[in-house]
Image 1 (cartoon, rainbow, N blue to C red):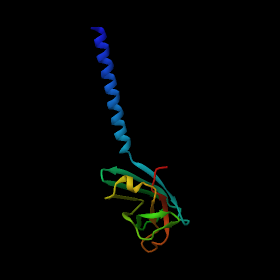
Image 2 (image 1 turned 90 degrees about the vertical axis):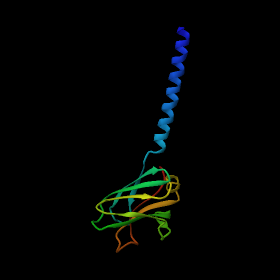
Image 3 (image 1 turned 60 degrees about the vertical axis):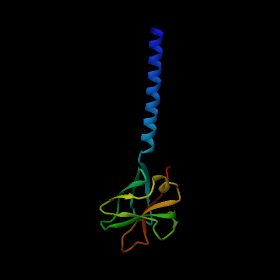
Image 4 (image 1 turned 30 degrees about the vertical axis):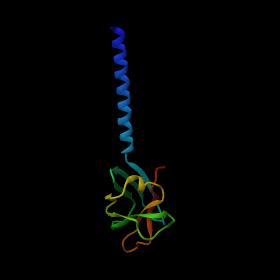
Length: 139
């Protein structure tokens, strides 16, 4: 009987370990990705974009420092920070008082594949000037 008890305990421990690994893997896959946004064009404005998978959508939070008090347009563009397609691919809510939160109807994997940039423009009046930018991908 003691041998049977030890085997049952060993099997139970093994099953628990496997289950814990599956739960940890699922949590890591849903973890937010923090992307540092670098100041550009002498703006002094930097920050972070936090992308959180939500099924077929992605929650995008922008937390900025050093910006103006004016609302600032923010978008995903195709390209690189120094050379991107002028037409935005995905719109984000404007940054107001250093923050913005948008749920984008695009899967996390598509946004973070590395061929898009997140940029924050100086203002609606000066939309051609990029205040902050980063390539949307894990480092």
